[in-house]
Image (cartoon, rainbow, N blue to C red; front, side):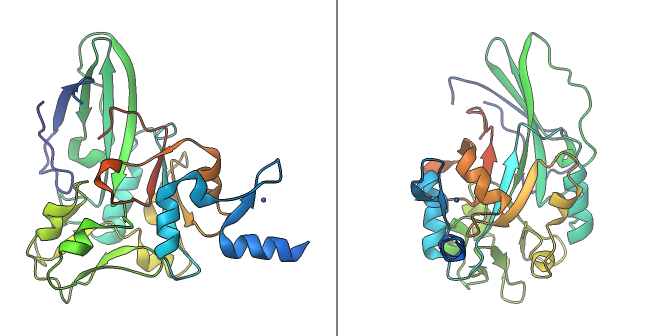
Length: 272
């Protein structure tokens, strides 16, 4: 396997990794439901979002606020335009050649070879592929911080600079961060980097500064096909909660036990 891409920072190159598939629902009732995160199936059975997805359940058990945020990425909708990456860099003043979010393109040929690239984090989208052979399928996968319920980065920070808010958002306190890089190494998703000027850890915050004002993350706002959604997992009427109930959902690297709150619709098994 050739792995030539570090996801927190791209260094301006077109980086490609190639591997084989073998390698790898009266007012009182509504109020009760809204407060507890439960819903009714058509059969009248009362079930919770957590019963559909255990990771969401673990997050709800730990969350103490009325809001518990979650993020949905729909890989069946993403067109790889890169507008999300551009909006993120502009909104959050992300330095050149570093990324809080990026998009990967997966190309799978008839002989089960998988090609993955993300030129400049896909901030300018993608050019036509030069992959030879019979292409079986191709799709785009946006990546970002997973804001895990059991976050490795929170556990390893020696000074408590990385922490989780009551709403489940994982943040970095720049005033306390010493730039040791432990969190960067501990993140299994490559979603962190050391800011080249501040020398502190940096990553996607789900645009927490916007969310606290009642706004959506920048990447969600600009997506032309609604491949990115954000909302309150504890509100059964929110779009993210409904999708968790109705769609087949996956998370990245479930074997790590981190219980991510970034969920994927249409996640192929080739995606790592």
